[in-house]
Length: 619
Image (cartoon, rainbow, N blue to C red; front, side, top):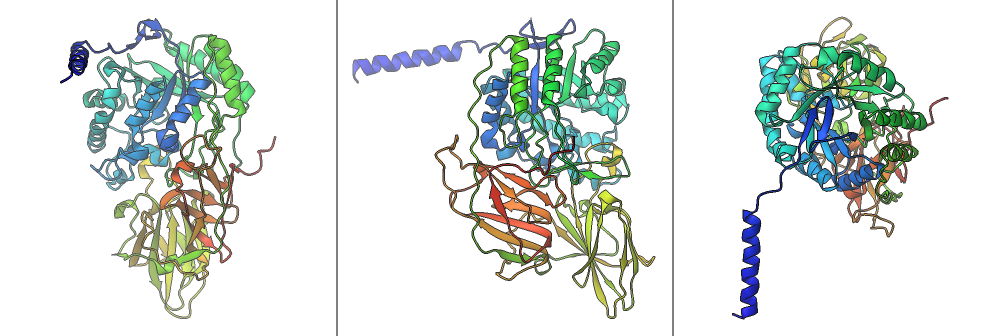
């Protein structure tokens, strides 16, 4: 062998031995010392923003992290969403869009620390506050309590999650500087034994190390209910409330540290309302006020993104029902598709002026465009594509059938002359009622509707009640009973039907649908082809440019892109577009399927290059 080659090999071996024998780089430290956050022993002001990995296409995570750094943030805060990771008991998914560990690693690679909020309850305008719906199948299990069955479930979940997260704690060289215990529990209850059980589960599972900074988060007035002795308590509040909120915190926790765990720099939308916007200049001034006093801040949201598919939540005070839109734009500094807004620039200036640090340059905008839709549409009637039913003498919910999302159809027979008042007790959430597949009317939980006059029939007839799960409540104690379908009883002229055929319609696999060129009206699937998109020269990534499905010509239902549930549409607004990420498109034809409860023979779809949230709110 050539002497030079031998010498090179020996040199490389020596380097490898040296590298192997050299001590690993000491991990950083993050502590609370004398009422102050400290990073590596030095005072540290957290300037964070909330961003959720399931709401941002994986291909864009790094772009959004870079935009966070360019706004002046040093930390990203995120929830962990139990229901996407454990869709069935003991079945876990941390792949693709659900790879929370990769999300955290990329944040670290982009120079950001991470605050982790693993719940198990997360609120977040997310279906059931992040709880998997299968927890509701056992009616004796009590969410957010010391119920042994519930605690066993969260212990199992935390233990599995820790396998992903533990290596990423700051003690192990990762970027996770703090872990939140539960989430705004003080707005739900005051059972400190439960809070201690969650803290214990975090530590026992390895989701937190013995020296991890654990903390609680509540509204200022709820801190006594939701906090634990010895743990920092951070406060959540909205625009205009900083001074009064920190004054309350200082009365309760005089020694600090002082942090806003959620500074609501925007708000979310319910179906049937106007799109929310907030005053960017006012919020930038308030942000500056907090930073100048040395307070730490995590703005909620830095980038809201999209509650893709079925994952939107809903609000309820126990009597009303307010489902959230698919869009989670939140009027955040980065808009739904990740573009910097005027608010972004105002916050960037506020952070730079108060910290004296010049942020990195803002990355280029993500490309968007309209794509053509091919002429012609194929259709499939729901009535012609029903699965085998479950025969039952009583009403069953989605959870009873191990169904998480989608629709459910209840069918029974009515006798000659039958008619009178149909009463549905416990409709969750929206129903269309048919006799012999002819639409008779609808009921909407939002509007507290439960009664409908049925016509008499001259021959035996089929009564169908098609129910949509419009999103589980994610706040208040309503979550404990938030099953979907018909959760109570059905009576016709005061009598309960004694037999039902129940069709589970999760719509997780549309491949079995039989499409034709026939026109279709009523509850129908419509298949379109978005033609031949190609990589544009203006694209900032290797993917195709983004687009938005224009849903103005539709009624109510769900859209799917290449088999993936994209989100909901509803003609009542305020959302009239569905964000369609470029990385989810493929060169050539892309399949768009709409399931429209009130489909028309003229059903159509188009695309545009921007979001449409309806008319602006009145001033």
